[in-house]
Image (cartoon, rainbow, N blue to C red; front, side, top):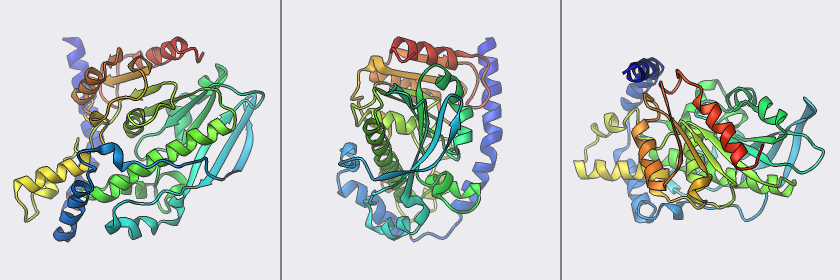
Length: 346
């Protein structure tokens, strides 16, 4: 009974955080839309077979990209590096290709590294959340100093349209998940996977012995998706992961304004979530997957995470008390470090 009460408090805090997003979504839903072009975008994902065979949507780089150390400074007993590389991702959908390419900053990818530099070490690669992405935010979110002090090297893959990859104010990062801009968001997801693969290749080339992947929120979505596409990770940890972009703010508020029928709206929803980790099966052993979720989470619904864990046969599934932002236990940290120890990373 007490836990349900605390879950409700966590949910209430999430709703407060969601309120501005709902206002923004309502404004976005009121914009003028070329519905025929939007319908063509939806048809594209069906006609190309991506909805029925989601894995075919994702291309991977054939080799490690050319990269350079853009910035370097001392960090504890090692080194902090900002590694930049030319991201060679090419958008699939021709209707958004020109618009997607029109953001020059996004063509440069970034891999942030905290390395000891004395010898090849096991590495934890981090996948950040929506609207996050700066290295300082990642240091707090993933407790990088603690991981480093445990003897691990740590890295952070910057997703498209985050940190230096988008000009303007912080709010510009919202372009990754603009309500009703299905084609653009789909390209962002595919681009995240492409650059995540590049990050693995660069880390392996630089001598990382084993690489485990951890993602939170949006980063958990990308980490789970990567687990369904690649055998590279030594493990995948998904912390309060998002599993569908149809929640918590549904595109139905936009679709209802369309001139199309209910069948089209179903097709539109399918085109917006065919790449969900729920539509994949893990390419690594289920025992190498950790999932931590909050029962009262309103941003990344708990029932979807529970469904994924059951479908994938995840034994390392931990349920937290509270919501996405406010929690009332320390299960996440305890589960994470126990998992690292079990996988012989610490």
